[in-house]
Amino acid sequence: MQVFPDLPDYGHGRSPAPLRTDANSPSQDAPPAPEHTARFAMPSAAIAATDSLKLQVDTPPGRIRASVVCRRGIAQDGVIEEMSPIDLRLFVRNPVAVGTLVTVRLSPENWDCHYDVVGIVHRCERLAMGVDLGLFLDQPMSDELIAACWLEMRRELRYPVIWSIWARSHTHGKIIAATIQNYSFSGLQLRMPHAARPGEEITLVADEPLASATVRWSAAVNGHEFVYGCQMNRGDGARLALRLQPGRP
Image 1 (cartoon, rainbow, N blue to C red):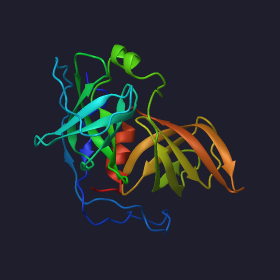
Image 2: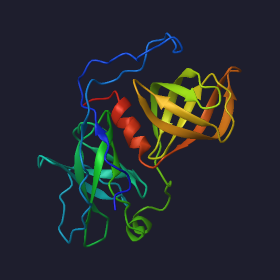
Image 3: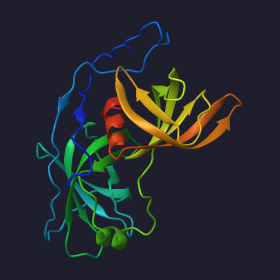
Image 4: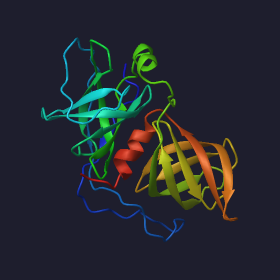
């Protein structure tokens, strides 16, 4: 069973559209919004048998080798930098477009087998020697694979960003300019000039509502702004990333 529903594929290279405003909406410029949407269904994850991988990227001891294959059959080798049951962060040589479905073949060190997992690219950041790639997986990885390969692991990985967004508090109903500072598969850190209490519901809006978040903790910064740790529905982090991610290969 897939852990999150079909997500919209927002495409790339489109001009942003403004936030539709009315008498009760703020006059500030809106965050970027693409002009069209499409839908896709994610394939099921598969488990493969033994094959050896030739790794072109240097693999530190104890790290998991990986081979990334997109739907067009283009493959490249890399290593896992971080992992959680539901997402992977890899170092690879070449960029992969945000929104691309890929199969990742994992080959743990000293194992005589490999595992295939399927995910969607939600982050692609160029580094000096390669690319930092973030994937959300279609299905959680097995506990046995995780326990054998990674000693310290978050329940979900966090990805630092600076994304402009509109936030509508369910308490007072106003729309406020806010900034997403990091996101995960089902959470985010939000900064905005509004004092919200734990348990308060906030709707994140671009040209349309994108996700709802529940405040779990808050901290005051600079006297007039607040940082919030928020929980979302599972998979809403992928929805936000595909909608707001400005980085393109």
